[in-house]
Length: 155
Image 1: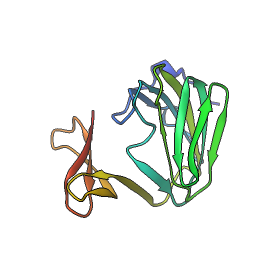
Image 2 (image 1 turned 30 degrees about the horizontal axis):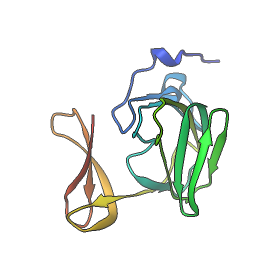
Image 3 (image 1 turned 135 degrees about the horizontal axis):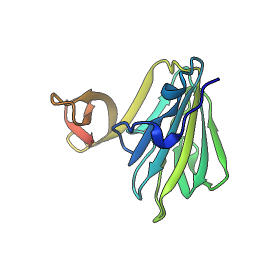
Image 4 (image 1 turned 60 degrees about the horizontal axis):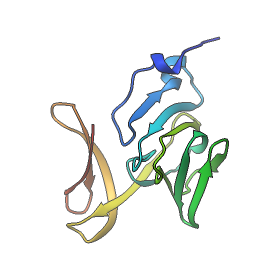
């Protein structure tokens, strides 16, 4: 058995005010568990994305998350869970004024290929993106695959 306190897990850089990889602290081998806190306007991912091999379940402990999906927006509030099967496009965002606290669970641990789309003003629409760590390792960048433009910076 392994046990940890979420407050003892170090934050990771990203689009959320707080992202703590709880599964790393617990040493899980078959699933991923992340703890999130989102300030208004923040998201659970770097962009609209899908994982080829990983199923994801989100539990909303506090606040409201709006998930963009292929079928339209879906709102999840405190106490609700949302499941995405492998290959389903999604992005959860805090569009409200209240802080969000959520857990994200994914299985298997290896997510396979991840495709991500973000708005690229240089290309004039949503384009495929890749992630890159800055040279001084203080931020993660999202870059347009088509033109190389920086579309986001996450510290």
